[in-house]
Image 1 (cartoon, rainbow, N blue to C red):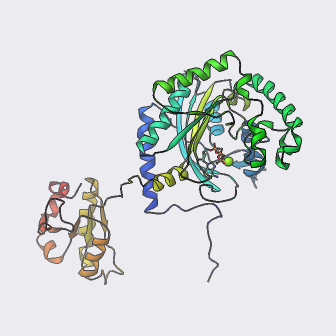
Image 2: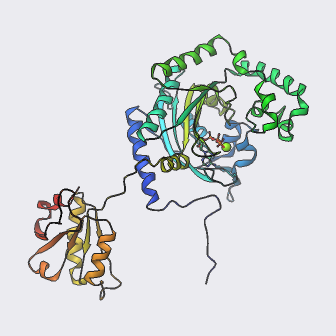
Image 3: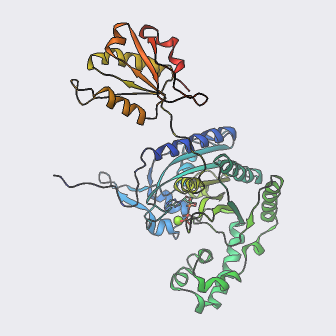
Length: 433
Ligand code: ATP
Ligand code: MG
């Protein structure tokens, strides 16, 4: 026998019935995005490597060690499986001059790829849903995006999701803060661990993200960017906060929230939960007014977020919010293969009328399976009705409908009834829910 093949480590198959949760979530998101006037964008999963190197920053975790990069065997082009989709969206917006007539609100859903150590809530292929608003400089759009995410948690029935907020100011303000930070870390060099020392000069801001307990007290007392923000940055931050306050959105200011990508400025935020262990960040985002320019587009302000679908679904499971199971209206019992042409024709008409119906399929045309085994399968399928395409029924030009489950308000299932095959439309509605 040939060697059995398995999926790549850290990359998961999403199978039924679990996939129903995914579809349920995606439908909720689509409906919600429409209500906020965000429209769908779909960009390639593979992008030129320089897009991420330039966009995300050379010394970020993602670019340093997490990207699936490879050379196109045929033309030598440097390509990368997208580790996130903000850079791709910005590239597409620039490439198609989408801001020509003003700002654009966009959303996406899809797989992302990062070479990380697989564990609960952390995979090598994972999925994000993201919302991006490009061409809008105002704090009201930052607030709108946070309100949109909050509305989604409510829509999904999630509890205990907390918002953390920070402002990263503008590049010049960060530069001053950075200099102060480097000086402070240098003065505390004996407290820094190896990784911190390595990054001290390349990316001192990322040190603040360290979880090393031995460094916490020192980090807590480090110079705060908030103290270096100029008047306009403070005003922007205060505006966002005022709009969240007016909407009773609770938040915690977290001065150490810096996010993984270099492209952020002003508002940054994360939604976190205690219910998922150490992978507790379900959504992160912020403003990225300089990214467009950085990848060679015409400068344009922008803000957005991305949520981790696996983590959100895990949280839904954890909090046992209801996810409706897919419903099957009917199961077609077909005792003899001779009935197949008439049955297929009737089922086709039923489906066109919106009825969800599963066809029985036998071992061979000579052996469709006993009535007993077919009814057993009908029962397991969860369908509310069996359609019986028996020889007697077909002789009368009919199909029998047999309820498999008692209606909620009655004790016994109704009796079987006959319905004409030449007029499916007149009774199809009986099967729908
Ligand atoms: P983390 O700190 O957990 O590594 P991140 O800052 O790298 O997260 P972002 O790049 O901001 O994450 O991505 C947005 C969201 O995507 C995260 O909040 C998380 O929910 C999800 N996410 C990121 N990386 C993974 C992964 N490897 N597996 C599953 N979900 C992920
Ligand atoms: Mg990460």
